[in-house]
Length: 307
Image 1 (tube, rainbow, N blue to C red):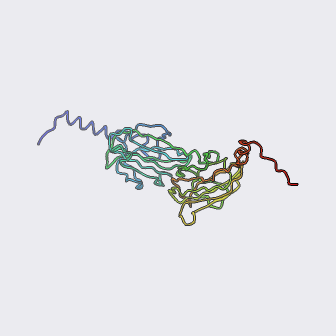
Image 2 (tube, rainbow, N blue to C red):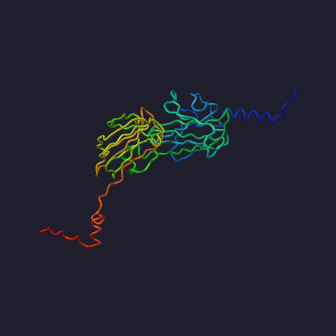
Image 3 (spheres, rainbow, N blue to C red):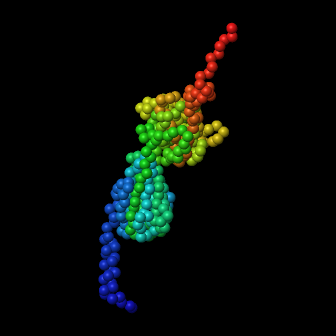
């Protein structure tokens, strides 16, 4: 029978003891996640973590992992291990409680960084999201988790973005919040964003038909954010489809607010345009043909009545 050297047996037993007594990371369990703020990054390790049991979420849980928590914004959040990783990472993002996790999304090999992972997801202002960083098929190692947040400035009426007619604007309602105001010939149940115009006069047409990325609605109000009387609203332009078009007569000196929102709970990217006829200017006295004739040739002769 072959006998192993005493030194080798001692080393093997020491390694077994170290592995058995190695402490798991503080954020090994879902119930004890590490908070990561927007615009920051943290280093992590799954070397001594345990494998979690949870629902499939974009990718299966197949290796030991560690947990983080991220606060949402009115917009979207991107979580990524692309900055640094020494193993094949995966990311799962959930909402809810640890014993009732609701999948937001997951990623394996995203972000264009090889075996790193990256996921962008829409969030609500003040929402809390659980992020699990794990490995592919049992792999473990170290990584850096980066959190970037992209806020939607015009999620509320007070942050309405200025727009002038004659331009097309790209936007998104993903991550915005629904509005708790009186509906304007539409329903107000979906995320919404605001635009404002102060220079409108005459017949105005506004439409999301240039590029409706989803089933949109369009509402127009006037006044101020504290008091918003309805002007007009629309869902589904007749004969066109799920884009929306409104038309109204704008009065001088009024402020008009445009609200882009979806049907039901739908949200997403869109393009919309405000179209108004060019302002009509009455010709000045000097621009009239008769005036030019007078300026060039002197006063017109006085007609003498016949006797």
